[in-house]
Length: 239
Image (tube, rainbow, N blue to C red; front, side):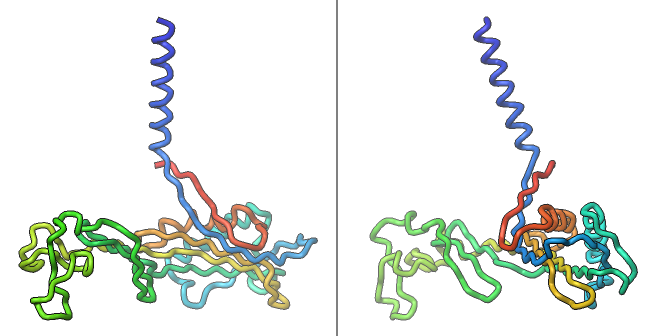
């Protein structure tokens, strides 16, 4: 009986662990930092310089409040424009990223970069559905010239054309990704010298940046002052 009870307890612990793990997700962001803060950095009075183009946008106002709150936690004090020893600038970045094209009946799937570069990333080989004697007319030669299926993997191997092919499907499923980011810079008010710059970026399928602003601000300033270089921040989220 004791062995049975122990086994039941073990199964229960495993189930609870799996359940708790399933209730959490992780937010990833890439961080790029430039740290030129002086060794005796103590005067943390600043004024926030509004971005000339983004300053009135709701997302920018949301990010501004989050940045001010985080800086306050780090010991910074906001002052009126022109009175602080530091200037803090904020910029939001939201641009189309890579697009993922895939189809279960194509020879492979692809990543299409914003510059138009097409990168094959492997996938499902449709010629496996066809016997070895299946042939395909090469597109640039007369229809009487036949080549093996794998010679032209981008179109149907069915002898009567892709229109009547029971397996081949020319349609792609397109998943567009977006690069969302936030850039925070701290400069000397008097000289304009750059003291600290941090850029936090994440890639999502959501076109809107607003749901990720708080997480981006947290990622950017979590390790302040961070050393110069690139790093990755992971934030555990509860579903």
